[in-house]
Image (cartoon, rainbow, N blue to C red; front, side, top):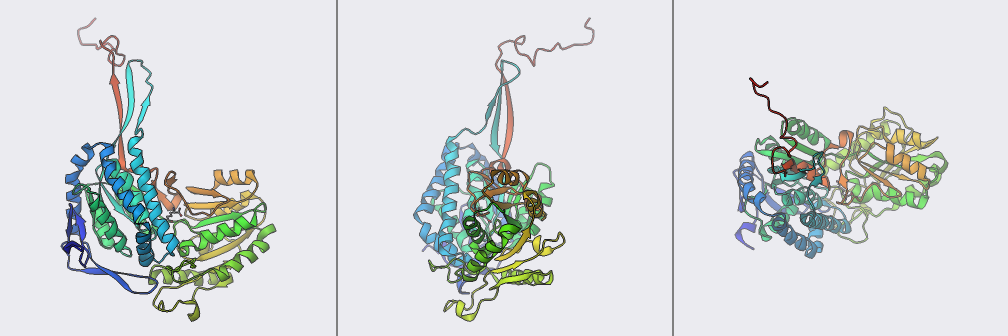
Length: 511
Ligand code: UN1
């Protein structure tokens, strides 16, 4: 281990591992055991300033390289991610608490993203458009915007950073990245991968730390765009600040209060499976997790019985154990929020169907007593537009079952009655119901006969309403990190031929 890799781990700025200007450090810990995983320097405004300066300086040379050469660096990272999937997947699980197959899937998703972004370097990157005038060529060319700030969450600590950074770098921008303070170890490994891949100094910079460092990124005048995935509270501030500045772009994705509609035409095997995956995978801590199941009265009793049966038994436990379905939540604040919303649902009239919110001692694996354990909390409640428990995001295994009667129009009305609009699903064998949902559900990611989770990089990933503006991820990230030049060129040899140049120029004194 080189000196640079000794703890406390450092920031990566301008191609160097640096301690930074502050004297504070912070620790990362395993949410399943409470064990400390590593100590990290805590970034300050001065560190962000140095990182942005390095990124700014590196921009001109990086943007002048070919797409293919820039993508070469990313291909090296791709191979590392593929070769080290098991090892890195275990780090994800230890730091974030998601069960091990999901830890590995986080890394697989990152590799898929890098493969897609680097592969794009050999694809057309603009448009050739016919002109009204035969001698004119019209092109749309993309060019990088400059220094891009990336602020990423803990729930996909490997995949989401690559959603932000892979396309951004291939397009010729430079990056200042702050990983989530809960998952700095994943950040450290990703930075090492970029260094090993030989990324030119200053092109990729990482500052570890908390919201104050994130804020310094957002406030920095030299940034041309900020990509953010995380809470609505922070995202709206960023969108307001950066998005309000001329010439700057904030692309933010900020969670949801996602729902699944199960119609009278639903295959209930699919419905139960989709609902369990959507509500309990990642212990409900995906921005695309579903917290509302909107079920037609004709099938509600049967669905409820079957869903409750699984929720009672779903395996909560050591996330490194292959038999676990749900690991712990990431930290104490997640438990507090979960309990707060469970209490709120009770106050608002919930009939609780499954209450494993606080696990019994014998359900907690040996040696894991200090972990942040919760289990499913499932309730039924009569729909009322004033209920907060049906509108506010919990980010945990908190699930409301709402019965509806009538047609798909009524179900979609209930589904759309939240300030958010990220993801959702409809379970039905009737294509008219499915198409109605596709067209009228106010969401960015819509699924039919599937869970509300599981998006792939080839599609845009983002929402509407309070869930976000712009796309910090998925295919569409390219729109946030590139400017467009509308290029017009005259090919006519002489001025008579060149329409657009040929208007008579009248001068005073002319007849
Ligand atoms: C998130 O929920 O924060 O669609 C990201 C999915 C994953 C990514 C989720 N590909 O479930």
